[in-house]
Image (tube, rainbow, N blue to C red; front, side):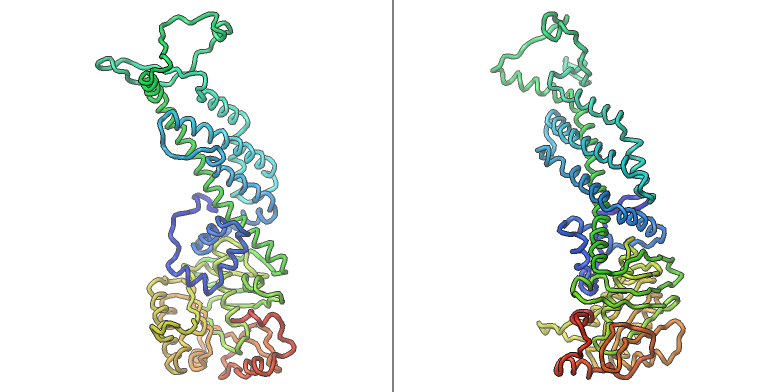
Length: 504
């Protein structure tokens, strides 16, 4: 997932994670990515909510994902092998905790024997696909597996493990120290014995002794000597086992992200949603454009067609969206936030084309239902959430506001929103603001500022909404009569399943 580093599994998620997940319905995407695998969901969540801020790093991840989409069987087989490697202690019936050196040696041997089999299958998979992939990440992984884990090396590993089995006895050397105590215990390679020695017809010269079967103290002393002899080897083998398990854990994590992306890609493709790899730009370019942009979570909530939107906001720092009720404004806002996060995760987006500058973070301020506990007024709650955003947001971030400060009267809400927008823009934060506050929208429109873009939800003459937004000046009405007619007089004939949840 990174060119020169591992994916950070310990980094904390942003403090506004819960709010962001709720407003953008990220949980819907995570469910589709996981396909029942909770580990994949956790990794995907971290990748989406801890965005990359370097365009080359994003492109690196996109290239790997492109290979995975072209070869879904490959990435799933790799992931299953990584999972098998991680679970090797369980499969070896080993409970991993530090015991005596002799027990530690035995446990490490059993795990390594399993891991070597997994590594060999991993290497064979690399042999099969090394010429099929194009991305730098997978090409380098497969080349490393081929170069460093060839058949000769794996056979040598197996030979070493057989020698360390020590089932036929242990040869240990030692020196006499002070008071004739043993020191410098070293495990030695057993002597090669000829045929007569193996069948006990010819004994080696030397001295020895036997411990009676019931001499428990003698057995304990002999076990102590053995542990001293194998301690260094046991610790070295345990460290090697830990390193290999760490490799498979990281491989599982990084492949889990790509498996999740492939799951989501296939699910969206089945629903005829256009998908593309976006073009990330440096933050100073102020890029933001899209063609046929869609809310990536919406297809999983309805059976009807999902409408796309075009956007040309390059160089703009403020986008104001107004227009008819139930016209697609909130859906457009979510589609923009999801696309930004998915792009900076190195993923595809639900659009025919999408390009944007990287952001230091994505923040949302969506309207909430009335506080059922009545511990605070609705406006107080909105102001408290905006204050929390102000404490966290940094320059070059993206702030998405959905009907913020509409809980009070037009004049007061517009003034609060103006001050918030002014402060954010001065802090180099890009703001996309959906609002019904005509005083706010019209006042900003009258400034004729080239850094502002005004969009309006489309409405046909008969009141039917096409669920699209397009450039347009603010109007002093949100066509509330459309909502009234739909609720009390029945929906117009052309309103389909799209309207059930397309705009909320």
